[in-house]
Image (cartoon, rainbow, N blue to C red; front, top):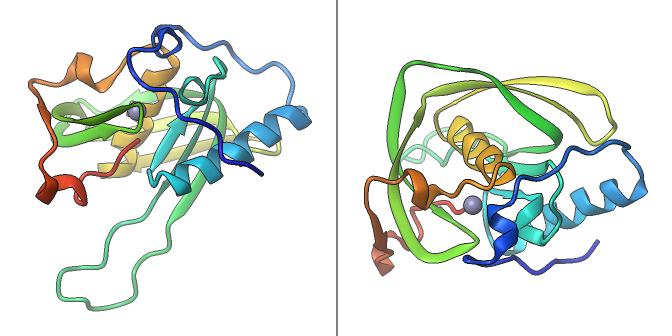
Length: 175
Ligand code: ZN
């Protein structure tokens, strides 16, 4: 595995529509593994193919809710998703607005309204079909990553884009 360089805005590749993966070969598995390593090193909660300069429909997402403020109970384990050709097949009418940032757009954050829950269909790392139902932050990250595959960035959707303040830096997961 190796850490790849994260492409930064305004690189053109971030604006191109990524193409579907046709064969799950060694190269794709290597790409997914490298993306996981790159996401963890950043650190971030999601990464899409175009962000590591590969215009392919692949995403990795890793997210777990934080410990509750009282520190009670054990923190839920982070869940890792490595997905090929992901599609959002269902999105709730109900929306939520939250602050997000992007590993490809350092220093900026914005409030983005997104569906509160989604269903994602994709192939997993072994090429098997999977269906994931997600809500809250996980749903947001999936929508952010699938946007990347379509050349869409959070700054296109944010009501207002602003420079990140130091005190917010740790609270805003980057994807
Ligand atoms: Zn992003």
